[in-house]
Image (cartoon, rainbow, N blue to C red):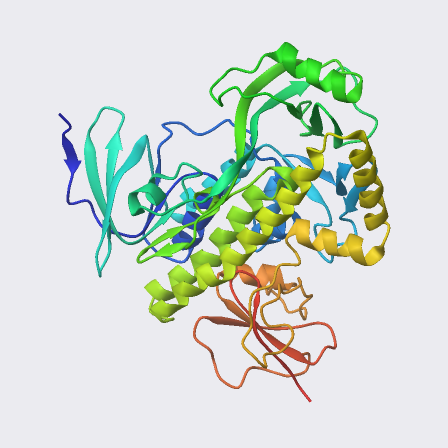
Length: 475
């Protein structure tokens, strides 16, 4: 029989379930805004898994706006682009960003940087506890937790967020459907050393029987992802290292002297999305809300952008500076993005899985032709990197409304930010005034005012997540 550890735990403003990248960013944002945040994680210890490894430009910008981008950049390898089929790939060096490329680093490094920030901000982390039940009423949410020894505890918060992955206990407690289907089964993962590096990295190749992908982490290890047609072992089945090498040899003609695996795993790749990201006072984010193939490295990045979108809205409502209806915009803005990621990653993985030599040659030729067209290449880079994501704007709004704000240089003033993303580190909206406009006509509560250094006569109100809330051209 289980015992109760506590039924009258001190209430939190927000209870976040899941200490992966999405939950850590969300919890850190909320605590930095001065809210009481409890982060619950089923794992008793920090993860050493490296399942996700691509950190795209928009996510690096999000980290930059929190002052942690440089710490993460130091942990991995920054690559100028991604390649999918044959000579077809996406050049990211033309992105209008301080981070024109993709950072390859183990997921545990991303989690480490985010957890350090969250703890410093005051997040209370509870490990070794899983969600056993959830109830909500008009004033808050009660989440029942159960520890490994069977003890139970109930925590109450004004709001709760399930960022607890594809098997989300929060989503199941809400009774929400997770429609979709399985795309790939029994994909093998490993972090290995190589005797000989491939001539070009990341290295990807597919054949009628499977595919293999190699990417460097920058610490002497490479991630290998391999799959062979017809494999149907469960995710819990151990990876046969000789089989992994054999698949790589079949695809590349060599296994590059693969040795010394430090971690291996299997996974099944599904395409699923919950119909609604909000249920009353409970929200879903990251893989709890949407899951898709790893093609393009979009999954973790999408979850992190979910967190950045939701955190400032929860903070504004809880601090009384915005109406509760603002929280509905989380679903309205992020659900279409999740749907787009499902389409993009799904198209890539289906291209990978083509078995006919003729169709594979046509695929490679089409991909190479597409990236040779500047417009198509730039469009692909904006989609994959997340830079091109925009949110709905009201009718008649300025064309910049809903778009990501670029990292504008600001007028140099002693002790003040020199660019927009530094100003966003205050966690507030930022009012960007044209040069020579002087001070704003009145002090705005919760808004940081700055002056742009360029000559554009456009005033911007930039949200804490870096998107333009409103814009106006002067003159």
